[in-house]
Length: 382
Image (cartoon, rainbow, N blue to C red; front, side, top):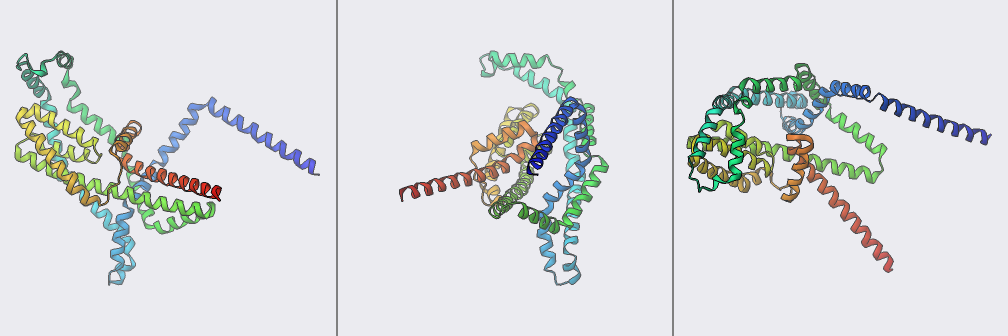
C-alpha cells in the first residue's frame, strides 16, 4: 500500500514538473503575447495603484485632523471625525490646486512663453558677446571655441518651438492622467482612507498568522520606522521647496532678474532633490540670467541665491525636518544617481528616504551579526 502511495506521489511530482516546463516553454515561445497581457493588466489596475499611493500620502494628514475632530465637544463632529477629516484634506488640496492654477501657473507659463519666443535672440546676443571678448580671455580656449562652433551649427529655435513643447506637455498629461483614471484613483483613495483601520487590522492579522512572532515584530517595527521617514521627508521637503521658491522669486524680482517667477519655481522644485537638485537648478538659472541680463546680474543673482540656500540649509530646513536623516552626502549622491538612472526624477526624489531605510536595515543586521559573534566567542571561552 505504501509502495503504491509513494509511486503515486512520484507520478504527481513528475507530472507537475513536466507541466511547469510546458507552461514556461509556451510563455517564452509567446513572450510578446504574455507581456501584452501583463501590460494590459497593469494599465487596468494603474488607477487602483494610484489610489493606494494617494491614500498613503494623505494617511498622516487625515489621521492628525481626525484626532482633532474626535476631541470636539460637539457629538456629531466627533462621531463623523473620519469622514470630516477626509473631506477637510481634499478641500485643502482643492484650494491649493485653485491657487496653483489661478495665480502661480499663469505667471510661470507666461515666463516660459516669453523665454521660448526669445530664445533665439538671447542665443545670438550671447554668441556676439562671446565673439567680442579679447583673444587672450580664458573663455577663448580651443575647447570652448569647438563647443561654440558646434552649437552655432545647430538650429536652436527648432528645439524650443512653443507648439512642440505644448504638444509634448499635452500628450504627457493625456497619457498619464486620463479623466477616468483620475476619478477612479480619487474614489479608491477615499475608500481606503475611510476604511484604513480595518485594512491595517487585516494586514496585521495576516502578517501575524503567516510570520513568526519575532519576525512579525521586526517587520512591524521596520514598517513603522520606514513610514515615519517617508512622511517626514516628503512633507518637509515639499514645505521647504515652497519656502525656498518664494524667497528666491522675491529676491530675483527685487534685483530685476528676467523670468524671476520661472527661475524661482525651478529652484524651489529642484530643491526637493538634496544636494544635486539645488546645484542643477542654480546652474540653469545662472545661465539664463547670464544670457538675459549679462555677467554682472548673473553674478549677483548667484551670490544672493547661494546666501538664501545657505540660510535654508542651516536654519530653515533643520527647523522643518527636526532630526536629520543622518546620511552621508556621498551615500546621498550615490542613491540619487542610481534612483535617477532607473526611475527618473521620481527616483531621484525618493532615493534619499529609501537609502535611509536601507541604512537602518544594514546597520541592524551588522549589529545583530556582531552581537552573535561576541556571544559565540564568549561561549567558546567558557
